[in-house]
Image 1: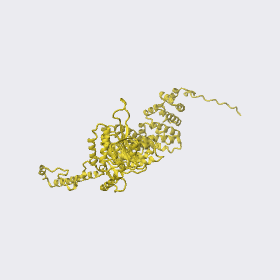
Image 2: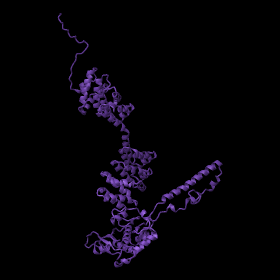
Image 3: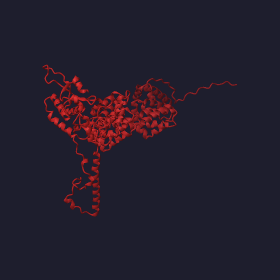
Image 4: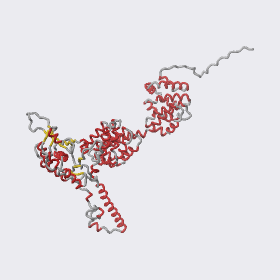
Length: 640
């Protein structure tokens, strides 16, 4: 066998550079490596940048300053798969930085990123490309570009990816894309809310149909944030009386009642605030009642959210203030007040506000009206009731048949306003009659009644249509005016006039109190001795009035024989009219009395003023006699 000859290694080509291992710790050097034509160098440089950027935002900012973003945005489309993977990973991590987002936006990198989401690409590329898109989709301009390039379809397709990170990033991006219109609605409503404080702007928005769109959006939107801002816009608009009228014409009450039923605390609070301000318009207050808006507000007093309860109490207070139809609200509040589990500070505050706004109900339940509670027209004394008693309105009481129960005494010195219901039937009048709305034709108009037949026929049809409209309009008005009104009490009116002339001019409060007490006693049957009360047949007189009027509700002016509670009520009503401060207290067994505060006319000690003393006014036995509060004679007057 021949001897083996060792094969010599071939020398490297002369035009190839020998391998140079480099270990760099400077990011600037690595950024320079991104411009290398060698694939292996690019892979290592991109990988190093990914690890460096992942350590924090400061490193990302450093790479931005060194100019790493632009070469990376180009390398994501490199022919080599390994280069693309590492470049996309680095760019995806860096995209969370705001400066990187701005640069990528200028470089128009979204088309290249969407191209990396193709099915043929690696799952790792899908993960970081979708991550980059999720960061970029926060900007509105980027959202628009993604939509234009059909990026939404691509992202939806990625939801079927087996990789959970790809699914997560795709979902985040899709969420950002579909939130665009909703975010615009919320922010737009904030702007509209600020603009609608100006009345001219409100009128302009109404003329252009903007109010209709606002109310429609408030009712139909599925986002509570949008509805809440719409309610706030309504609240800002309703700050002026003119704007409240405009909103009432747009039937805003229906929208607000609908919003109360949405299970969202912020929305309910905003709706209650809007209702509270809209209640300053009387027509809106009546509309809320017709829409049964009181009950959902009362139910909100049971809410666990303090702001909701506070807003509901305010809305309920304004809604029931000076409203004789708030008995239903009282019934609901009474149920809450009697319940140990549902009772709270807000329900108590709402109940007290309701009492202060309806003194008739307050007097029935509490049996006391302070000197600050001024009796006005429409007040009625229903009598003492139990805490769980269900109140009904005065109209319902008036329409009841005569029964054996205690009569309700009311006060109303307001003369009736001229009503259209007193007009004779309109349909019996011709449109040319003096009572009609059309003026009588003049002589000159008779001369012009000779046009062609076609014109005369058309004119007759127009006149006939006009005549029908003129007949229908008054009929509609008459129907609207046919609502129940509390009967006028002319006798009570004359009593106020007499007291104003005879008692008010007296020099001091004490003389006024005494004179008023004598006046009331004279109008109610005169003084009655204590041991002859059983001979004072006031019950028979009141029963006769009930059957004479065929009603359980009688005016106080027609009572000629009144007992303690009749006289005390009349004294309080007249005293409030002429400025005498007095309280009204109900006792047992048809007893009631008035208390006044009187100061000493001449101080006992010179230069010293003592607080006024409380006195009970005698209206029954010795009219005008003043008894010190809680004295034996005062207690005897108040009891049997």
